[in-house]
Length: 229
Image 1: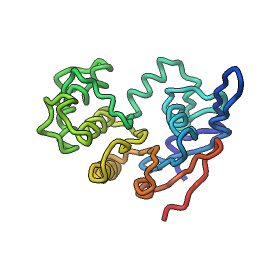
Image 2: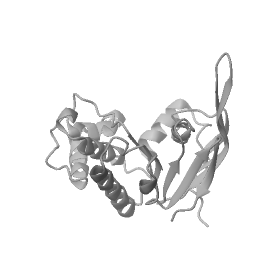
Image 3: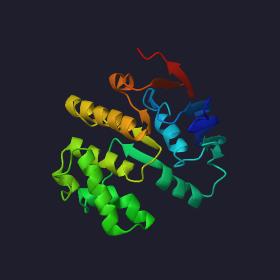
């Protein structure tokens, strides 16, 4: 049996203030294989986004570790983690986080610009991806000139620019209507099939979650498998 692409072991995370301590994650164990799509459901405040951020090395667990291709991520330096995120991961959020002063093509190419790649070649790659997500006529549009569904497609193209093995998506359809939600799901499915990209999706949308290979539910700080039927 092949090793999992991602694995977390005994992840714990709590937040404290002067009056109390809140245990967000309590010995969470989880894995995802290459090419797999997984949804995580849970009530608001259950720790879904916290878990996603820890898996993506955007947050640090109080204890436990995360492994990517059997290599520990939290024994790496902050710089090594940043390089890892840029090279191996893509991120898509409920709020697209596009930079308003840049065109759609520039936004998609931004991870390559940050890496120091050639600007002209980066924009060529960005335009190819915009065409792939159906936005070949929107290359020069700025975010305010795009619809909500179009902005989210730009965000997905940006997440793909470095050909990551894994994309983390935090409520990617939370601000979209039913038609655009279905369109984004179709895009995720197509990308998964075409590029063998793994997707870990945090969502409140049970119907969207049911379209993933596996559904997990986060409750009382722990993950459990849900029947997907």
